[in-house]
Length: 113
Image (cartoon, rainbow, N blue to C red):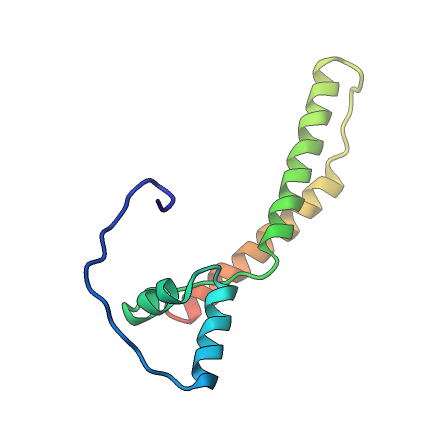
């Protein structure tokens, strides 16, 4: 069952002939999108936007590390083990992540998706 728990019964079959080169290209695109070929071709044919964001896993990991560091500093401040926190390096990392996410959304807007 797909994420979200909704199962849609697909009742119709569409056969599609492609060259070996076209097949390999579709297969590669589906793999990059983390989909099977049927899902990829169906969404493409229905004019659904398929976004593949390289490096998103690293970005999420970096953001989680920032949150963890901030949480640790907050706990130390609450327990009065530290009295002043220098957040300048943390702020720079958050700004860099913000700019990267902004550039991704701007690219999306420019392509009309």
